[in-house]
Image (tube, rainbow, N blue to C red; front, top):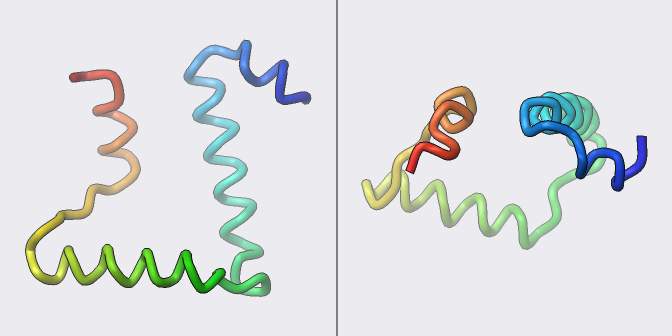
Length: 69
């Protein structure tokens, strides 16, 4: 499937593709390693959560709130 075809899909199907991609990437990320700048960003965000300046939301909750502003 081309990027052009994906852009014309309904949002629900785009989310399904995105979830499949994340699952696939998650299974191979250990062997690829995390780039330094990504690790620094993750560490910064974890620190904000630990200090109570931010909170975490699980992906299912995020998906259910998209577009409900």
